Length: 332
Image (tube, rainbow, N blue to C red; front, side, top):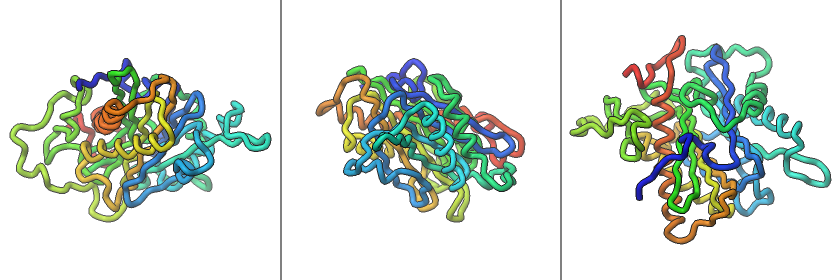
């Protein structure tokens, strides 16, 4: 099967989703929010050993709340979880949320990555700035948004290269759309050995992240384990996989599971004890199409491929900034 991207090659090719970014260049950190125009079915799968999360337990299919209003990806380690409160404020102003006896509570799961020691000035005083960054990101959410050194990817780092925020989309044969969004701050490497060739190269469409394919022959050090740091911290790739297909909560959970294959295809090594690798899933159901049998297998396979592309695109688009610790891919 030949995949093709949507018109934007962004997660917002999935109907019913908007994305907003907010960042502080001095801080070298930021926040990204996925806003759902209508409550969406959601799931989550955590495979890293050091996650930082909010409202993930409620996403399990057996629990009460069956849909959510937004998802937050943020820098700032545990401080960054405050960004979800800012997003909740925007949604509350709009009268959006889970209703219980006349009260409305916006449902905003969140995950964070560690960017506290990336060269930015984290002397923010009494209160961390992430609640306001979340509010700003939610207010700016739109169909078009920037990738690279933006939002939650602003201060991200990988092994030897600056990280970033990446996104990609895939149009399936039945007309349904998949989209991926990833803030890439991995302990491992996104490139093969010491080369500038991406591990995700087999899934690239056109030249969306350079078009240089795999190195030939593969370098002798291709399988060497290259880590950002040798200690147990400072990492995590957090992501969202979304579709407009009609999925149940259990199927959305399966979509998040399948999308983790994209981490393994794009990052070596992935899912380490020092990463908090996590993927949220969303199903807006606006296509009206419920994938059956072989189409469902194709959807889950494409989830991994789309995620791998999003990861590589985030690194490919990263831009240099003052006091960077690592170079950007374009300068390698």
